[in-house]
Image 1 (cartoon, rainbow, N blue to C red):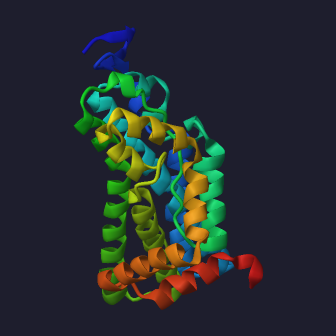
Image 2: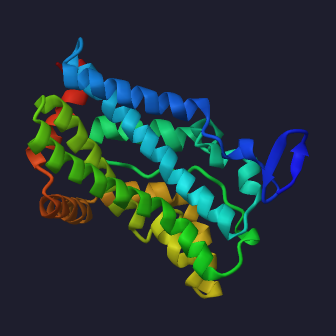
Length: 265
């Protein structure tokens, strides 16, 4: 450990400030907790409470998804990622705030699915070995999978033990459903998305060049696939089947989706 300036310790050559959660992220966490309490107590317009609860919770999960990519990349060798601000969980530091924040929230409100966002830029040249590259890409979806399991467990245990208003549990169920869809979408082997980036290092040079050519259009390809009735049907059948297997009530997250569209009520 060294010092960048008097009194400012370094962690592997990076100031500790680069690892501190940003005020923006802390504000999102505070909003998530406060809106959850409001939804539980039926404060004011409960539909708007659930809206704030789900949107802030989804944004917190997006920050943690991208943080997982960043921290694994940092440990794998990309030290500059700390200087780019990605380890502070600040969504305003992302390379594409529109794709990473605004678009996923809009898709949640309109379509009720957890759309992956492209956010942190990783210096792949600073990371040796194909396994490490795959682990960097896997870290984000693994976070979504963990969130899915935690939220489903909280829903199944908490609703039985504590009871409480159905609106609160509907919001929590919708958050779990969003994490489930995000987990599956992020694991699809589509160029430019996490699932595709996991296999990219293992491709031969010819296939890798083709992959890199299509990677910037990954989101468009994802939308095209989901828009296709057959492929989209297969995807959502898989989502609903997994939700049922986990014990996630479809009527409850359906109610959550209805509640967050408070402007319709």
